[in-house]
Length: 230
Image 1: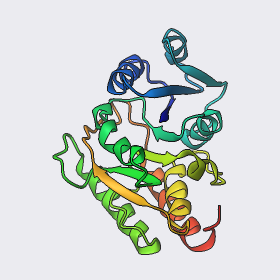
Image 2 (image 1 turned 180 degrees about the vertical axis):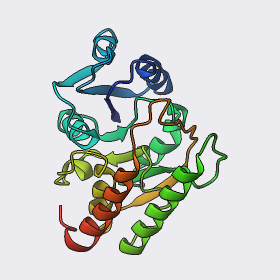
Image 3 (image 1 turned 90 degrees about the vertical axis):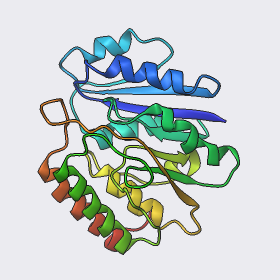
C-alpha cells in the first residue's frame, strides 16, 4: 500500500527538516511519497526543503493558504492512501501505524486522529481546547458521523475518496470543508483513533487566529447545510 504524506508549510524553517525526518522514520517499511508544499515562505524554509532528499517539492511563489497548498498536494499525490501532516511538531508521526492499519485490512475509507480520545495531551491551551470542542460539536450536529476532532491535522483518506471531492477553500476553511463533504458521502466508512498532541503558541509560530475560527463556523454551516455535494 503506497502512502502519500502531504506536508504544507509556510515559514517553518525551525521544524521542517525535523518533521520530515520523523515522517521518514515512522514509515520505514511502507512504500511512500512525501510531498512538501512551500506556500510562499520568506524565511528560508524553501531552501531547507530543497536540501531534503527523497521528497517532492511544490512551490507556491505567493502565500495562498493551507487549503490551496493541500489541494496542490492532493493533485500531485499518487498513493492509495493520502495522509496530512503539518510542518510543525505538534503532531507525532509515530501515530501513523494506528492510522494506517485499518486501510491495510480494507476496513475504512477515512481515518481521523482525534486529540480528544484516549491519550493525555501536552500544552493543549484552554482557548484552543474549547474552540476545537465547540467546532467538533457543531460538526456532529450537521453530519451523520461521530466526529470528535474536526480540526485535527491527522486526516487519512483512500485516495479516490479525497480526489473525488471538489475542494475550493484556500485557507484553514479546508478542514471543515473536507470534513462536511466527506461525511455526507453515502456509506462512507469512517473511524477515529487516539493521537498525541503537543500544542504551540502564536509566539512559537502557530498560524491559526481567532478569525479562522469564525470562518470555520461559517464553513461548517455552509458545507453542512447548503453545499453537501462533491
